[in-house]
Length: 132
Image 1: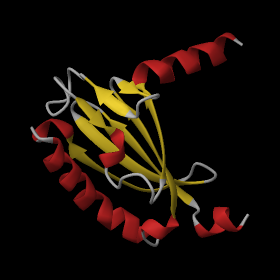
Image 2 (image 1 turned 180 degrees about the horizontal axis):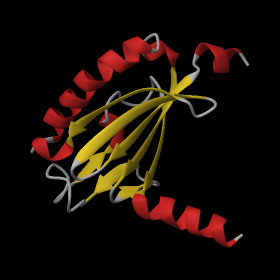
Image 3 (image 1 turned 135 degrees about the horizontal axis):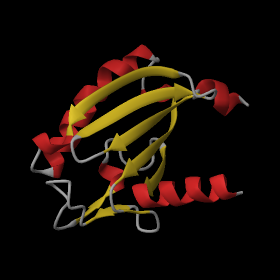
């Protein structure tokens, strides 16, 4: 219970080919803060990560800092759940011909927990739930 109150928020990242949209939500799913950057504006992953971190700082401050974040969920094209990578994503300029570890987006493993899924995995889960 203490973990839930000391780290009451999670970050969601919808990493698309055009935009990357970040949101911070509480346990009820209420949106506390959002921000976005242009994904296609960066040809190198390091530049994308830097821009992501800069965009996140103001909304992290709104909720009390990184210490209040329990986890980060990432929805990304061609995300490989088992490897923790984005692999050969044709719509990401910095990942279309390589494999990029998701742990570099944007804080790295160890500070917060990560959950990632490909858009296809999310679609398949929702489809199964609708059929049930």
